[in-house]
Length: 180
Image 1 (cartoon, rainbow, N blue to C red):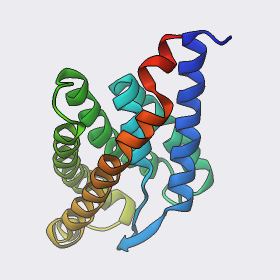
Image 2: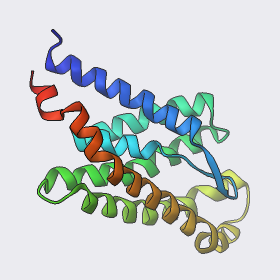
Image 3: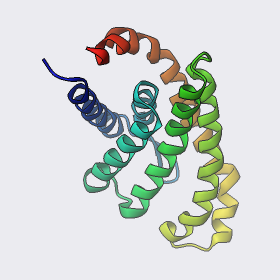
C-alpha cells in the first residue's frame, strides 16, 4: 500500500500531466499573440487540494515543459505563464485554505482579479521586449487588448473550476484518499 507522501507526489505528477494536456489541447487564439488555455483550472484545483505551494510547483513544471514543446515565446513566455498561473491559482488556493468555510468561489474571484491586475503590469514591462516595439505602443494595447484577454481568460477559468471542483473532489474523496 502506498504511503500518504507517495500518493501526494503521484497526484501532483498527474496534475502536471493534466495541466499540460489542457494547455496543449485547449489552446485557442484570442487577441494578438495571446492564446487561452484551461491549464489554470487544473493548477487551481491542485492548490485547493494541497495548498498554494502545489499550485506554484505545478505552474512552474507545466510552464517549463510548455517552453520546450508547444510555446513559441521562449523564456519570456515561460516567465509570463508562471506569473499568470500563479497570480490566479496561488491566490485562489491561499484564500481557500485560509477561509475553508467560504466556497472556493471567493478565492477564485480574488485570483481572477489578481491575475488581471498583475498581468496588466507584467505586460507593460515584458511585452515591449517580446514584441520589439516601444513601450508607448504597448500602453495603447493594455486596455483594448490585454485587459479583455485577461478578463476573459480568468473568468472562463474561474467558472470551469467552480463547475468541476465538487465533482472532482467527491470522486477522488480527497480527505479519505490522502489519510490512508
